[in-house]
Length: 349
Image 1: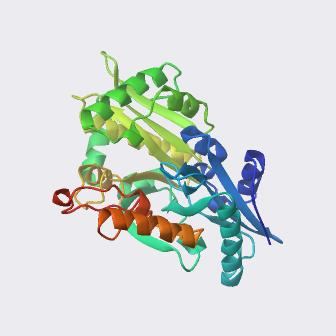
Image 2: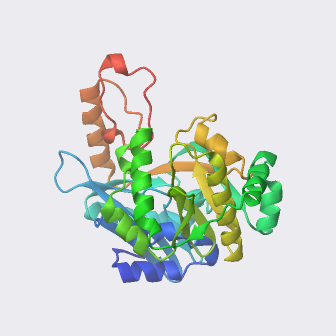
Image 3: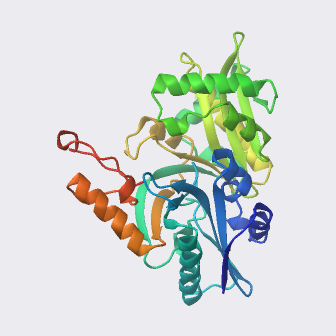
C-alpha cells in the first residue's frame, strides 16, 4: 500500500477514475486553488483501490513546520474508489497518517459532502459532528417534478415572475464585475465573516473555473439579483448570491427556479442549495431555502487525527491557557475568550 502527496495532474487523474456518483467540482484541484495555493491531496493506492484525501494546508499559529488539513469553503472530505472493505480502509488511513504526519499535518478537519455522504469513507476513530440541515432540489425525476414538489408559496412567486416578464441572463461577461460589487456590498451590509468576503483575486479565479455559471436578473436601473452556481457532472451547487437591498426575494426565487431548470437540462441529479447562515433550525436563510424543496440532507463535519502526540500536546497547552476543555474539533484553534464571555460559546471548526 502506497501513500503519497500528488501533483495537481495526478490529483485530477485520481478523481477522473471515480464513478460518476462520487465526482464533484468541490474535490478538484482547480476549486482548491481558488482559496489558496497551499492545497494538497494524498492518494493511497493498493491494487485497484484508492483513498483520495484533498484539502487546504493551514499552518498552525505560533508553531513551526506543522499544519492541519481543512476542507475549502464548501464540501469535501475523503473519497474511495475500487474494492475497499473495512479492513482495507483501516490500513489506508494508517498509510495516510504516515504521509500526513511526514508533511507536518497534525489533523484533518473535513466539511463532509452532504449528497455523497462520505462519512462511510472515514476511519473508525474519526470524530463526526452533525452540524445542520441542508436543502437540496432533487432532479432525479426532472425539473418539472422538482417544481411540483416545492412549497406553494415558491411556486406562486415563480408564476408571478413569469407573468411580469422577468428574465434570467446566463454567463454574460459584463455581469461578473457587477455581481462582484453587489456581493461585496451585501457582505458589508450583512456583517459577514471575513471568510465569506471574497476579493478580486478570488472572483477572477472563480470566473475562470470550469463549471462556474453566473445567473442574473436586471431591472431598468441595474443588476437586481445575481448568483453563481457550480456545475458538476452529477450535482450543481449554489455557491454565492446577492441582491440589492430593496430587492424582494421573489427575484431570487425566480433565479433559483431557472437554475433548477438549467441543472435538470444538463442532466444533474440535484441542485444543492446549502443550509442557513447558522445551525439554528429557524435560521432565516434556511427558512427561505426550505420553500424550494422538501429534500433535507444533513451536513456533518469530522476530524481525523494524523499525529496523536502532537495533537494531544497542542490541545493540552491550549486547555492549560484557557482553563477549560476545548470544544472545537481542532481545539487548539478555538478562540480563548474571557470568562465573562464564555456563556453560550460553541464551535466545531
